[in-house]
Amino acid sequence: MDRTGYTILGIDPGSIKTGFGLIEVVANSYKHIENGLIVPPKDMVFKDRIGFIFSEVCEVIKEFHPDVIALEDIFIAKNAQSALKLGHVRGAVMSAAVIHGLPLFEYTPTHVKQSVVGHGRAEKYQIQAMICTLLGLKEPPYEDAADALAIALTHAFSM
Amino acid sequence: MDRTGYTILGIDPGSIKTGFGLIEVVANSYKHIENGLIVPPKDMVFKDRIGFIFSEVCEVIKEFHPDVIALEDIFIAKNAQSALKLGHVRGAVMSAAVIHGLPLFEYTPTHVKQSVVGHGRAEKYQIQAMICTLLGLKEPPYEDAADALAIALTHAFSM
Image 1: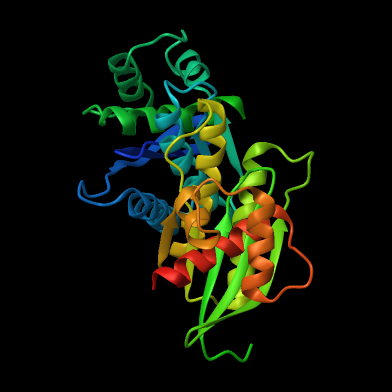
Image 2: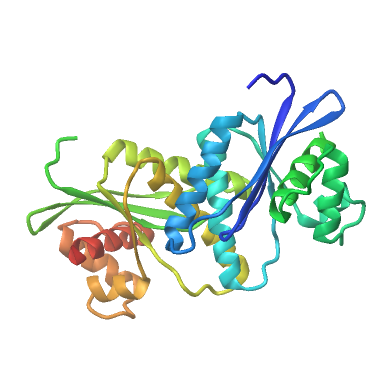
């Protein structure tokens, strides 16, 4: 890994799919490094899914050595059950940040959409399209990976 | 640490106070090792509280080398906000288990009360009293630490 810039790992947390996206900031330009999805096997029990996500986030950190983690924040959840699940995933990501000594910043979905697309109610496909434009990608990443790159870019823009 | 038995770390998770309790099982007897509370400083922001709890659970594991973690399970939360908070703490505990290669078992509050006191609607003070009896303690531990010891005992009884 031969990088001179500031590397941001964006994470869009979810117990079914957790998106991640890495960008490098050099001067005022943004370079795409990697993106992907962490998808625990469907037959895994919940506690093991959380362990799986924690381990995979740690692997991504060990491979790409980000300087910071930018995580999607949430204030309102649809219901207690989905809030409980999402909380576990966010707790695992926060733990991965602590174990690797990385600072962690949080951005709400509205802030991310506003920052990347220009308005807070942007659709998923608009985020994917804008990510392609901003990072010079030929193929749009999966939705959750595009969201993760958008979170990383939001942190870059806020610096 | 000179122990020959099987050591169980019970954890009663909470973002304000997380109780922990360690017991050792030798043959059919149960020995109290330690109990306490993990209390993040009040002025800490939420993400740092989760990081604090994760780090402290890791410290307890490093100091007492448990063989297993027994964690209070939850299916129903009062509301989405408290579910979200509790989820983070449980996610951090699960991550601490993974990083130390420890198996993790979960027990519902009703199961724990049934197992330790004999009925599933036991009050906190009844758990504290029973913990003193079962583990030969002269002073009752704090409520959340007593709950953590009860969770550890529940795992011991289920073995």
